[in-house]
Amino acid sequence: MKKISEVYVPAPEALNSLKKRKAEELTYEQKICLDFLKKHTKLNVSKSRELMEELQKIGRIDARQASMIINIMPKTKEDIKLIFLKERTIPRDNEIEKILEVVNKYAE
Image (cartoon, rainbow, N blue to C red; front, top):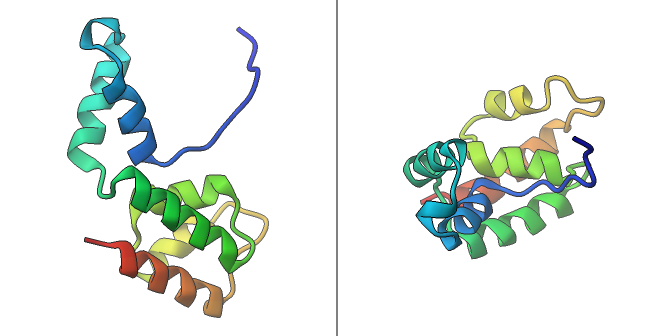
């Protein structure tokens, strides 16, 4: 199988995409994923898109990293540092503070 493209989407968008399909059309793995996302997704699609845009405006955060932040909704500096642990660029302390502010604004 050849990978044609890759798009990073946060969990709320994946959940929305799976909900649109009929249950009979879903594979076993997709049903498990749907069940997991229903239990663990914290934001709706519109809020996650807004949060994604705000996170990417902060600085050196790409779509993949923003998606991870949205999926995890970190509460501490250490949580954010763990997300960026294997990255080439790690946000500075002031950027981490901004990330926490934005995430807390959207946290329910």
